[in-house]
Every structure is written in structure tokens, then in C-alpha cells.
Length: 231
Image (cartoon, one colour):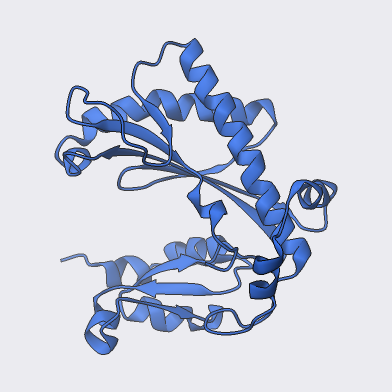
């Protein structure tokens, strides 16, 4: 039987994983092995521990915090407060609903000459791109971002998976990216209204009225940018 161990052992898969990890500050392993060994199913690792993660059949995630770039991650997903299993029971219906949202997002990105990496998740899509911290655009992100005094103090601490301090510039650029994506999200929502998209679209999983199958909607989740960059 073909297992996830076999999948991760393929060279092309390994190359793509390493490409996606890129300049991440740290990576996270998640899965049964860690749960059995430590009681907690996830743990942060250094990037050079990728062999251990994959050899144990763990799923691997990269940090949003990057050495050289500010990451943009637009998380779009279907949610249902009454029947959360709807996406798994009827994926054709759910992804049929999401398809128009997907197309509008790609069209809006293309207006800015952005070609994001689009990945399918269990409930929708991630749209990902990055901007170099040393580019003109990276410096513009810093100008519109803000780091509160209390968060700045936390950024100066070193503990846990945060093995170095977060500079104010990094923090501002991350906050600035969140503001840009919020603006972009409102443009997407306006465009969906123009094309008469009938399904509810919310920023994060905000409750809506009952529809065809319970309280269901599409979420454009920006909550990641409400957390510190190292989370």
C-alpha cells in the first residue's frame, strides 16, 4: 500500500517541500509520532531537521516568519457552523461554490501583476506570495505597518521557537502586508457583488443566517495578521 512515507521519499516531492520552506525561520512537524512520543502532536524544528520530520511520516509546515521576505497568505475556505462536515461529504458542491471566488481572486491579483502560488486545502485555497524585505515594495510595507510598544517588547524576547529577536522593520512589514490583504479582500468582495455572487462571503468565520445547508459561508481569513509574526 502506498503510504505518506512513500510519498515523502520521492525526490521531486522532497525538492518541492524544500522549495516551499525556503528561508523560513523554523519549520513545524505534526502527526501521530509526536503525539505518541511526547503527548503533543506538533513541535517546532530547525530547517536542517527536515529529514527527521519526513522519516517519521510527519506533516511539515513552514513559519510565516521568513529570513528575507514578507509572506502574503490569503486563506479562503468554506465553513459551516451547523454542519462542519459538509465540505467532506459533498466536496463537489462546496468547491463548485468556491470556484467563482477563486476565479475573482486570481483576476484581482493579475491586475497587480501578482501570480500567487495557489494550493488546495481541505476546505478551500491558500494564495501565497512573498515580497523581499530589501525591495522598494518591502520598504513600502514598513511605512504603512505598525508595531505597538507591547508587541515590540515581545519581539525583543528570545524563547521557545523564537531563536532570535524580531526587528521592528520585520514587524511593521508583516503588519503592512496584513493591511494590504485587507484592502485586497474588500476589492474581491466588491467584485463578487458586481458579478452577483449569491453565497455569503465573510472576513473570518463570522456567523451568518441559515442558507441551503445550515449557517454556511465563504471565509476570507485574515486573522493570521492579528498574531505576532513568529506564531
